[in-house]
Image (tube, rainbow, N blue to C red):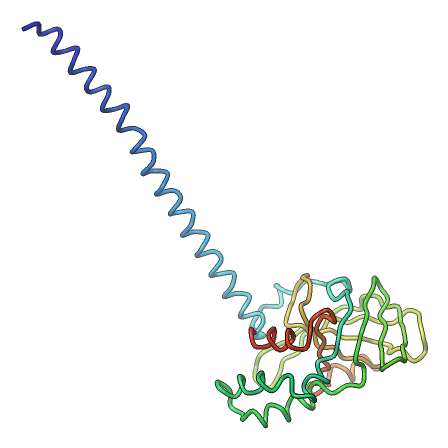
Length: 229
């Protein structure tokens, strides 16, 4: 037998094995890399979600707070108080009672005080804020006036982002203070708003917090949003 032929054949077979085997190894390596990237992304997203949950619950460090512009609340907004009164939010109250410390009726009474307002619509456009009471409207132009950190009886904290009136109707409030459970720039999905002419006195108000959702949402959609959170 020609041993040189055997040697050449063996080399060809070995080379073929390497050529065939290399893509498989590369595929395995790529799969492992993809799995690692997916695990890393999942862990990062989980950590981010957990951090955001803490912030929403009022658990954060002062260093995390950043100034916010009025544009974070820009849009056309509806009060949820009429929805509480007409029964639309009854399922929300019942849902809270399932895991909370109050009955549905007690939650309804609590939010009756919290949501109460005669300002049924607010439109924010640039620096302009217009308050609607039925067909009557008053408008003011507002500029950033900093923020204040509040500590509640529960031990959790909140941030009020404050804007002062610089022009507009006399009847428009001198100050507006936003609270939406956020502490740095982001578009609000809803918010609680405090308004009046005494900046310091407003910071003492913790029982009445008129709440607004986008006017584009139907009553049922507002209820769905609340149930989801």
